[in-house]
Length: 87
Image 1 (cartoon, rainbow, N blue to C red):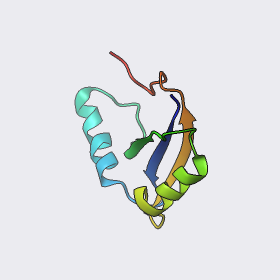
Image 2 (image 1 turned 90 degrees about the vertical axis):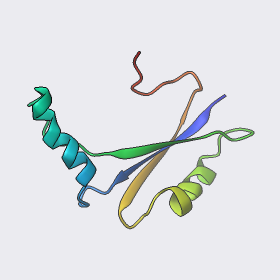
Image 3 (image 1 turned 90 degrees about the horizontal axis):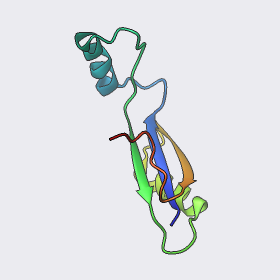
Image 4 (image 1 turned 120 degrees about the vertical axis):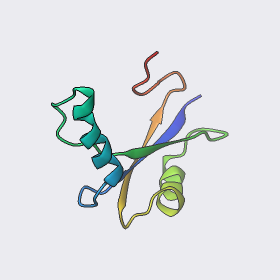
């Protein structure tokens, strides 16, 4: 069953202290080629019928994201699609 994925990220001009903390810790792990890190959220929505992108955008705008400081994207993914997963 397809589902809707909402990715929420801080706007580029908003300081991301969590991402900055991760970026500052990377050299201690021997990683020196990362310029910056931004931390966000992924929310998955399953509708009872067909995925409704307009409804998902409304949900994201009114409930999942703070439009003053965050941007969001909405997309449909198939149920067997995993994003960035590895064993």
